[in-house]
Length: 249
Ligand code: PGA
Image 1 (cartoon, rainbow, N blue to C red):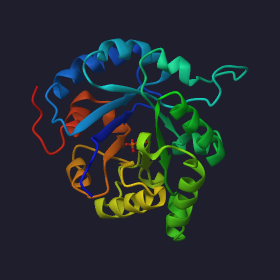
Image 2: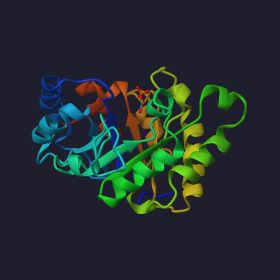
Image 3: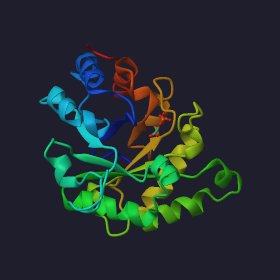
Image 4: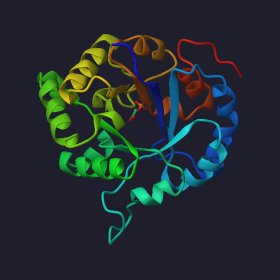
């Protein structure tokens, strides 16, 4: 399917990077993406504490900022949570929701993920909704059923034109085992079909690296990537952002 929108290359820093480290990253990274081909955009998802300083460091660069989560209420007695208006104040444009880590460690449900994604869209944030199967589910041939349920329940009522879905097989996250590009493409195509809108942006995530990015990005149904570990190093994320093109510093 020819892309009608830009590819989205997103870096998820997880619980990494102090403010000082985020600033140093920006200084090293920005020259590497100053001449990016115009068919793509780059998004960085720092921890909440580094959002303000990174937002200043990236101002005018075209690199966007995502939160790593967002609560569905605007304010209230939700200790430890961050709402969409709090993120908007710092120029945040995207919010990751439904990542397999909060699904696993904090028992996030598809219903909560849907509330988060709806709140994001209601406040003009683009939700990056993660879906994906575990190794056990894959081995039990449940991959399609699990992801179909995550798509059906997690994306209910969302505007597909302001949405990114990230296919992240859990067994490929942080393991160095990238899903074969053709298989990632097959699942991304299924997700596009289930969403029912050809323009939805579908990313692949799970051990994406400079060595695998080019193969992934030639696939017909992969519109971008969500990168964890390899986004922590400016040189490697710079190379990923410049996929199929030389880095021009
Ligand atoms: P990884 O993480 O690239 O380190 O596998 C991806 C993710 O969790 O989004």
